[in-house]
Image 1 (cartoon, rainbow, N blue to C red):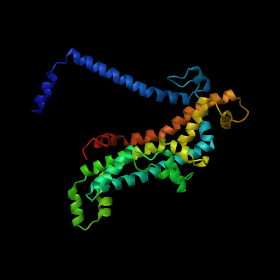
Image 2: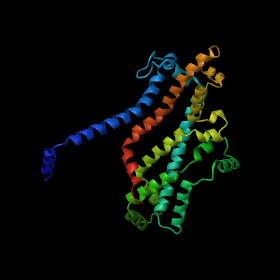
Image 3: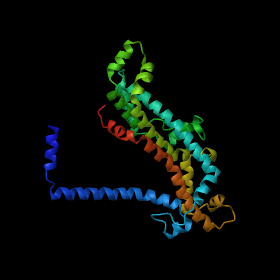
Image 4: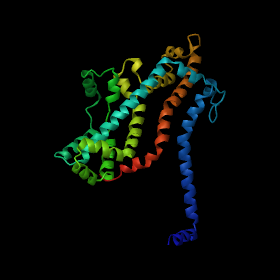
Length: 309
């Protein structure tokens, strides 16, 4: 029967409108792909080109006057290296904490208990409404979290959207019969969660690591508000400062630290432009590696949120 169906599909003649649609569809997606890929490729090209080639507009598709001076400046700058290490620490510890709290809260929301609807309503309300930046800042400051590593790790610990996705996954992928069987064998909630739920939730855990990890790595605003000690700044905040200075042309003396005080200011601005592109490449590499290593979980992670839970 399957062979007959396949042969009948081959015998169906494609009309001119079908071919036109396929061509138009392919053309549109190629254009979209180029619009997305070209800016990323240009950043890589610019990071390996000389400052003169960038400002003259000659470095577009391929590196011109190949140079590594931008990367040398990045990796020789103490603050950038320190901030890179800080971002790794904040991302790893913060993401691990977020995933654990999210999975525990998601499991709790799949159980039946008195007041469950009220708790769900509280989470949904918190997803759309917050107390605002100023009350949050005053509260964290009164708790002694201002200008500390702790604030970078625990703030924004749980995303309600990710919590709802994890709850849906657990409720649809872990049968209630397993819970009943575990309870009959004398297991409590902690045993069931760590020995049954977590091993069966590897897919959603990987997805949560991707979502939280990317958000943590790209977070610059938290440090902008709460951190004043330069040794505690993450990479994204330092990168933002460099890009802002390069675009505005202000605080020119800050650029001189990259290249020595003997260079001209105009030369420093040009080289700072190269450093800007190099910083973007260096900051993006960990995220690309994370996406590539976890790409097989993407489809499952996106579709699980579409299930009714």
